[in-house]
Figure 1 (cartoon, one colour):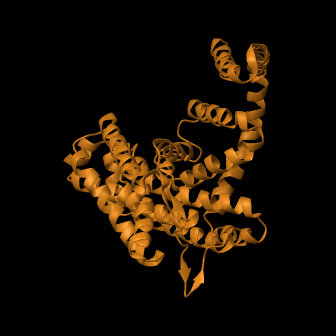
Figure 2 (tube, one colour; figure 1 turned 90 degrees about the vertical axis):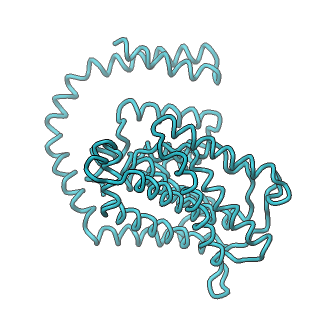
Figure 3 (cartoon, rainbow, N blue to C red; figure 1 turned 30 degrees about the vertical axis):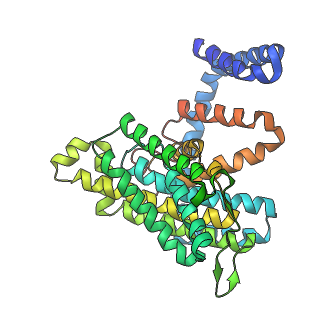
Length: 372
């Protein structure tokens, strides 16, 4: 009873700055009564749940079996391929951005989900990838496909450089080092006017082209992003179930135990940070080509927090989960745009309630094995 009242009070206090004392008091009363009503209906709901649960378990089991069939995967792929023909340009643009963030989330999931290393400066690698392509075009006139390997290589090298001083750290200390690295990169981009044009950014970045055919249109660029998302998902999944991936998960569960079993934890941490950074470089180049403009304002600390929220919301260590987390956290604010004053409040409340009632994430679980 007390817990329900405290939750109602907390939500009402969050609502107070937007609608005033009277509306917050009404919300508190309504929520308190609702929680109390649900509590007294709990016995009836539990009996109904006991009746329905066996049927639900059968449906869930069949659904998992169906999702593992190759035919269902091809069906989902067919739907994704047909989306540009039915979606409006605005929704298609948001879908492209969702795909870029899905690549970022899967890359960060390698570091946080597979290896258990908290990285709060992941946006720095994203920025390095975007600015590498922008500068290679602005200074040397190189196109997207020539610049892409250089973007990926430089971000991978940056991940290696960050990992060297951070290897002896873990937990909060590693998070602080990565946070500092992210801020250093942003400040360099913001203040090195002669190279990066400072806060004004770099504009006029061309979209990629294939055999002279530009991919700048939303419909065509969507397919490029879809290909990159599928590639990222497939490669990361294969790595996860390889020897390296199992070593990462052993380090995540117990680093000391993994070390005593003969796993070179230093080397595998280097692998994780470098491999996770690789995908940020890919996403950064794709972002620069899509927006045709980059500036330091696109790579703030809040971007790192947003990407980390995608990993946590979907389920740490679950690849389908982080893709779902990217979809929710990019699409949901757009769906709630009609109530602009409240959409971030609703999003924040939803995340907190998610962590309270389902801390393993939407598709997470013990090791997240069942969701692959």
